[in-house]
Amino acid sequence: MNKNTRYFMAGSGAILAAGLATGLFAYYGGGFAALSASTGPTELSYVPSDAAVIAYADVGAIMNSELRQRIKQVLPTQEGQEEFHRETGIDIERDIQYVVAAVTPGSTHSALLVARGNFNPTQLETLAVQHGGTAELYRDKRLVSRAAQPEGQGSGTLAFLEPGLIAIGDTATIKRAIDAQLSATSVTSNDEIMTLVAQIERTHNAWAVGRFDVLTSQANLPEQVLRQIPPVKWFAAAGHINGGVSGMVRVEATDDEAAELLRRQVNGAMAFGEMMSRSDPRAAAMLKSLDVSGTGKSVQLSFTVPAELLQMVLPAGAVPVEQP
Amino acid sequence: MMPTRTLPPTPGYLTSAVRVFELSLSEMLWSRRTIFMALIVGAPVVIALILRMAVSLGLPIFENDIRGGGTAVRMTGPAIFGLMIWVFYLRFTVPVLGVFYGTSLMADEVEDKTITYLFARPIPRGAVLLGKYLAYLACTILVVLPSVVLVYLLVVPMRGSLGASFIDLLKDLALLSLGLAVYGAVFAFVGAKFKRPLLVGLVFIFGWEQAALAFPGYMRQFTVAYYLQGLVPHAMPRDGVINLLQGIFRDTPGFGGLFWLALIWAVFLALGVYVVERREYVLEQ
Figure (spheres, rainbow over the protein chains, first blue to last red):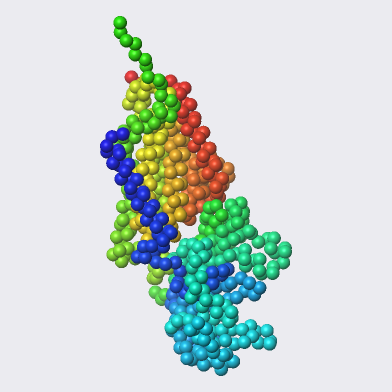
């Protein structure tokens, strides 16, 4: 082996080692802020670490998307939305930037909704008190709670977490959320769920990840139905909405065999769908946009519905017809 | 009276292979074939660099304008990286390098009429092929993997995360190394056995493998690509009719594919060694 060969091998090895070290550092340290910002929205710090499902929606981006604008043209004026605006001062179209939602497992699923946007705390608190709410201070955060109603309605709490950040949920869940943020025991310390979030959150404006097995085990489903549900541990669903819609659904099965079975079932369903949709170009085009991938325990179904296809699917008035 | 000199003991199989490896590595690395290899692994790096520069300049190349009027689908760095792994490396670089280098391991020595000198050495004949195969593996891996790492560093950070794609990078590097090893073993056998090995190799990768993967049935199980592509962590691109057909009829052997790849590798390397041990190479005058 001559000197040039040794130099070449050293150089090649150095490039390889440097690249791998960079990736490893980014993987473990979450470093390189310029290249890779922290995973997920900062509001995840309010989600308890045992959350079974967490979801995110960039409401601002979705409301401003071309698709939403087109749908808005054909939908009748939404009176409920206007009434909500009048009473709370919140214009859903403009005032909410994004929302984070979570469901924690337990005897009753506890849901938490955290919203970032432009809110008027005084107006919201007054409205809540008018509807029977009582204000309290919990760990320096202002909460307005309504006790559980005898007719079966559960307790509800509105919390003002930070300027421009509110949370809605039952009282116990809201208090757990505040505790989680203050004691740094939020879902951000759950590596499994955050790895899934990191894989999807940058490229989609709406996503949800969660423990499928926890949800099904607590859903009180009949035995026959439970037997038909594939053995899936994790699921992740994400979408990007603009002129078209692209998205993916990924599941992590409990073992390779279950994943392989699931892949076959999905491929079979797609093949059957393609066969049945020959006479319907819209359905055929939709099916063509589906793609199944994944190895090992992972199964992923991704799709892209371009704007032209949505033009075919949406009602005629939904898409402005260009005049020649 | 002349003192008697005892001959040194014949080196063992592995020692012989290592000596041939050391001899062949420099020869292989600084040959004209390396220029070809540098071109095919350099192209993705150059493309990645151009992409990165274009994005830095604010060109909307990651916006896939489907409607013609507005942005519909956003491309991301990790998605582009996955696409480049499929198109440049897995479907082209790995099989092509396997063919060009694998078939030449013995064929070059025959063509240059230097095989006699190798076989005249007191080493097992099979160790010659094994040593040359190891040199091929070292040579290609040391060129291909750094190229993949450079593409990863350039492309993935664009709307993506180096950390989130790191595991995929490791899988890709392992998969490409495995691909080079298996294709190399198959074509080392082809080079040792057949008279026109390059032609046989090209027909295999661009004819047989492409056709077998495009149709349903069990024929795909007689390709290397079937097992290799089943392990790719990225979504399969669906550009062109052949790729579309391959995508439709694609089923994934999963990690069972690893067993079959290991078997193909072992069988063909052993066959290659067996052929070199037994075959009488006749040099054309």
